[in-house]
Image 1 (cartoon, rainbow, N blue to C red):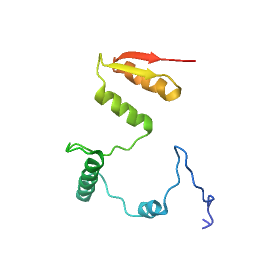
Image 2: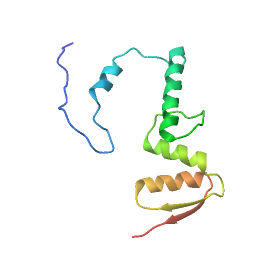
Image 3: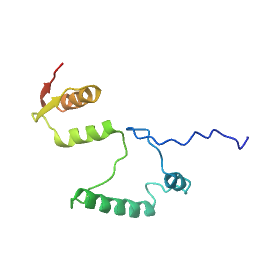
Length: 117
């Protein structure tokens, strides 16, 4: 196999993603993997959670990072804060508000969808 492989040009991407990756991230990705059951992982998880509690100004011991898309984050918020009968107003303005509407419907929220042409 040739050592010549595709080298994409350097770009600065400022949109919602995919985004430019800092070279330090690539360097970290070259490190050996640590599995989720490795004792060292729990130390990293503890430190990360502690920093997140500081960032979000909470003392909740169950503060964790969850990897996912923006829609995954939106759904996590919906299923944790909206229960049957919760009043929710959705300002319809496109694709993601449609997704949010559907998530609220699945939670049986009291939904008010506000639409303007």
